[in-house]
Length: 112
Image (cartoon, rainbow, N blue to C red; front, side, top):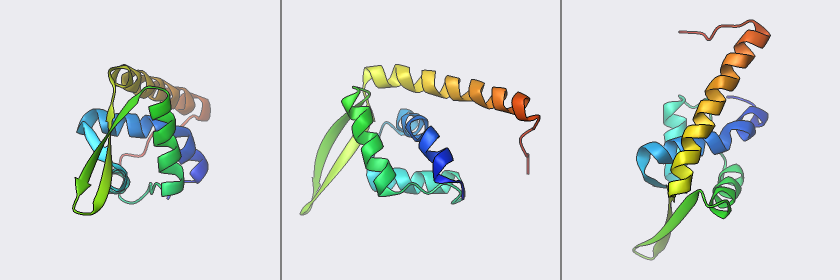
């Protein structure tokens, strides 16, 4: 598992990218998808997830939709038009950052 410091610095980018690919997701679904895609190396806690989702929503990058499933309420998140543009910008920015860090630290990513 990675440090919470690293995850905190990339969480918005991760969420924007996932929602760009999957159109709409609810909180638990997001945490499970991240675990699956990273082979459990990144595990997002509710304490980190929901404040970040709410901040993205407040910035106009996400829209929400409430669905009733029996007696439970499920809140789905999706990218707004602004969020779709911002998602690409954040992913591009992070890719450039990774290249800069590779050069700075003199490392190449592991392939295995």
